[in-house]
Structure formats: C-alpha cells, structure tokens
Image (tube, rainbow, N blue to C red):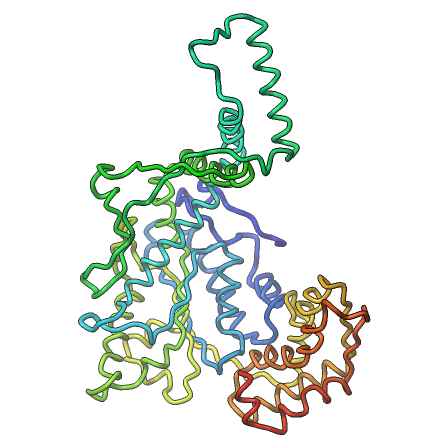
Length: 466
C-alpha cells in the first residue's frame, strides 16, 4: 500500500505501538479510501483528520498528549452507503485494532445480555492476535529452521547409546543421510510421507461465569489457573509431513514469542490506536417508555458514556484505559434523531457527518471504479472456469438504473442492492459455466433487461431476493 510504513517504538516516542503512517496527509488518506469507496467525501475527510490528529498527538509532550481527547464521530445515513466500510478501511490503513459492534446487542448492567465493556475486551483480544501475527512473521525464519530439525529428528531419529557415532565413518554416513533428507524436505518430496507427532490437547473448554457486567463468556482455562497442574497433556497424531510442518511451525512460533511482551504491546495499541465502530446507535436513541425492550435504552447510553469519556476496563490481558480510543458511531436515524441521545453522549461525539443516499451515477461508479468493484469480482470468479465476461457500458448503466428503481419501490438498502441485482443477472451464467462451450459472454443492455424485467415489475419479488 502506497505511503504505508510501520513506525518503530523508538520513532513513536517509546509508546511501542504501530502508529498511523506519519507521511500520509489527510488528502492521501482520502485518496486511499477512494480506491474502495465511492463518494461520501465529508465522512472521508472527517476520519482522515481524526487519523492525522492521532499522529499529531503522539508528537506532543506527554503532559499535553494526555489531555488531547479523540474527536469521536457520528455518521448519519441510510444503510448500504459506506459507513462501516469507511471505518473498516481506515483501521486497515492505520493498522489499528478495530471492532464493529451493534449497539442494539448490549444491555445496561443489571439486565441479561452483554455489557458495553465487553467490546473493549473483544478489542483487546483482536489486538493481541494482531501482535502475535506480527511477531510470528518476525520469528518465522528461525521457527522454520527449528521445525526442519524436528522433522529430521522424526524422519531419522538420532541413534541411541548402543550405536557409537564416535567412529568417523558412522558419523559421516548419518550426516549424509540427514542432509539428503533435508534436501528432500526443502524440495517438497516428502509432503505426503506419514509421520507421528505429539500435539497439545486442551483439557478444559471455556465456560460461562457471572461477572460484574452480567453473563459473559470468559475464556477460563483451568490449566492456566492451577499452574499447569492438569495441563501439558499431549496426544499422538499421524499426519503427513506437510501438515506436521504447519502444526510444528505454530508450536515453535509460540515458544519464540514473548507472550507477556505481546500482551503489553496489544494493550498499548488498544489504548493509543484502537477504533470501535458502534453501528445502529439510533436503536438506543429513543427515550425510555418504562416497559418492554426500550427499558434499558438510556441505560445503554449511560454505560457507553463511561467508555467514551474514558474509564478503565478489566480484560483477561490486563487493564485498558479507553481515554484515547476512537469511537465512531453510525445509524440511519429514520425514526429517532441524534438529538434523542442523552446530552452527555452527544457531547462526546462532536463531529457529525451525513452520508448521502446513492443514485444511478454512484451505482455506475461502484460497479466499475473501486479496486474491489463488483464487476471485477464476477469477472475474476468466472475466469476461473475459463469464461471471459464482458460488460458493455449500456449494460452497466441499465444495472445501475434498475438497482435505483428497486430501491425506490421497496426498502432502500443502498449499494447492497447491487449484490442482489448482479447475482440474479448472472444466475444462468454462474450455474452453467462449468459445462459451457462458449468461452466469451457479453452482457449488453438487452440481456440485462431480459434477465431482470420481472424484478422491477413485481415488487414482492424484489423484496424476496433480499
């Protein structure tokens, strides 16, 4: 990815986190987002500035940096216009721990369900996996060397005490045989050769306990809790060399990774660069009515307020401060409006951007321009069957017009409508592709109208294909 680099801990003032690429200006961030998302310039500008402000904060003196709070964002717009994709692509661009949650899945403390602090716990788990993956890449070469030696020991066990390798001839013969096997391993000649290895066996599954925030799934492992009293159990498995290499590679990487250091870095990343995307925030924006499912709506908002304002959350990896986590909330706000949120929570989301609905011009661009455009995806999929799929410009225009028309006739689901339209359009080609003798299929406007005419005529059918 152009302009992206990993900043070492020393460059980041000793924070030990992977920072957003300092050389990327907000304009460059927007250009990067433009590769995947059509339109919505206001939202892209807002998240680009928020990302850049994180880089600026890390350059401040510690006393000042501590006082600079993230400018959290509320995205307002109908479904399918790119709210989630903007946040997800931003996190990927910045290499930040990212989690998407739905506000309607949470309840306030005292009700059965997940409490809002669990989103931070999940974010910590995600960050730890990110760090472990990066560390595994760093130690991968050393781990592969260790795996190679372990496989050679299995294929050609060292001689026991009864055989004397002190003799030069015996030692040289053993060495030559081992090196021959080593070369065969590297050439991939022994991938299917069966070997027997020992793998760790998990004795105790995770189970549920009642915590301070209600019923939570906690990965409680008795082996860890009791200091290995019941742990260390292994079982033998007979697998091919290729599969054994993967299993042993993971084991060797785990041995080489400092888990405690990885946890510290993961928690630091969550605190300094974590992004939490809270979808459906409008579902908890209604005022309480005292009965039914609405009873805890304002309670969820108040629990969220504590997280957004800054608090300490206990995770199984350690305490996490949420003061500098970037929270991005989104909602359609068809029934409620942002002003229905409690005032304190409104104040913690100072930046509000409205995302516009998508029409025919945007659908045409979505089908063709992004790096992951739908037409490019379908062409690549059918090319695996030897089918070359060609779309004429008039066909793309008709697809966009029909998608917009169906959105008007039924629920407006934005760009997601294009997925249903394209799937219906290419239903016959996708089904018959393995047996087709014709290697080139051209999609023109007449073909599109013929295949999709029923969808526009029958509103019920357009609802059904959702």
